[in-house]
Length: 72
Image (tube, rainbow, N blue to C red):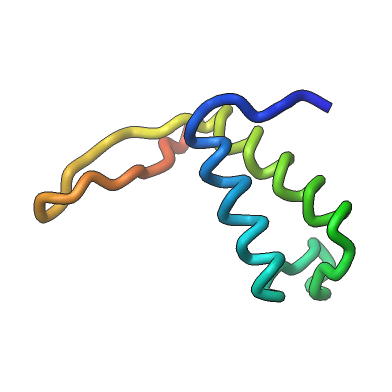
């Protein structure tokens, strides 16, 4: 399994795992994920997808926010 190396990908992995530990992570069928191994696979997949999309930095009211760039 390829690793997630870019900062945006790591941030997405962290978000997904945080959702898992708060019991908010849903699978594609809509059921709550209870298996940590399944959560890790979902997190890695989301992280790689975020890396492929890329980000565009913008400032909004003095704060820097990351926004995904949607490619056609």
